[in-house]
Length: 456
Image (cartoon, rainbow, N blue to C red; front, side, top):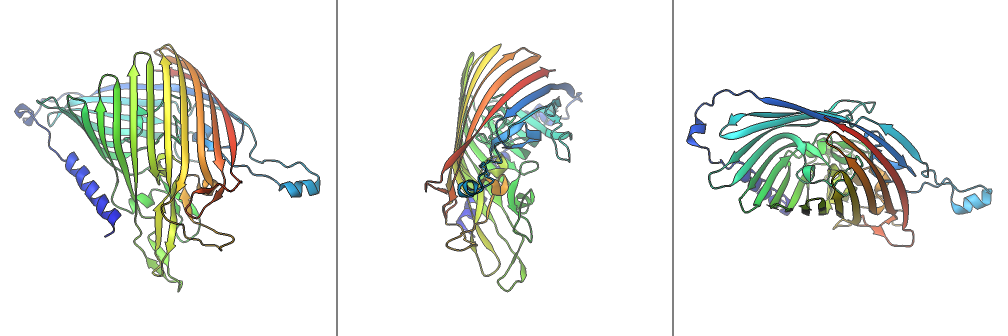
């Protein structure tokens, strides 16, 4: 068994042990509780976005969720354009504008009776940005049940089972107006999970979660071809779930967390030997993504920030992944995660009128190993699996600044945001990072977002 596999099994065992701890249950709670009705509270909003982009940009959810601008795509080389006497054109320098309401949302908060001495609750939530041939398909965003215990010693614990935000997303997202909510700098995922949170009166606690995939998934090889695809199979075939472990601290003004995400994947289930024979293969790669989060709030002022040393976090809507590092005679391939430094900082001030300023940063640092060259020394070719497919394998980094202003009432919000996202592209080095060989260049997208929202 590999060192990574041993570490992963120890991590899972720790997480399961934490989640399996039986809370203190009062003796009277062991008796059959009197039946109580579940209280149902509807909520939601109607939300309309207008967006303008100055160039072609990688987006999802009908274009409302913006990630980063595509690289330059010139119709001709400079020499060819001069020889032909025609203008050289960047085919991706195309502006775009749209207005959509598909992220309007409806949900039900459920508040129930005591179960095993715990307060029971739940949630089911949907919007219209789901899978399908159009961007108007009803999709489940959240659907979970939750049990909360309060212990005699002042400690409290929470067990959640179902689909909700990833432990690095959710309530700790920045306050930007754009649909992406800080992604790809902020981890963004809602996923099926079992999550346990313990808190103490001193504010110290921990979070342990076992997570599977649904909407947000890895990129990987298409079986039997050289093409890439997005699929939950890469996580599901690994059997063992993704694990998040975090140490938390919370008081009146501060929330802080240190933790790590651990992700096992199985990219392929069969391979081909040098004799062109198909064989079943067991290829597992485990990656680790340590993170630190800090949040401060006092009255009208709020500050939030996160740092993540990301390894294969494409399932968190981030621009990295993994690559093939060796091709073996038994038909198996070896893999290694691609790493990136990813961070953001968010400042906000105000109540009815609220100003917000967001900064995001991502730097690709490649793999700890050299990638396998499927080409030649003069024309290398690598197999890299990452968010967005082959469009971003030569991405060096991203920077974003996004100031906004909003007017907020209890049932009504309107806001205006400017978002400048610069992506730097270049030539691949043999470890998956980008070479500073004079060909590094940046492209910039300027996005304007206007929001009108009615809450109920």
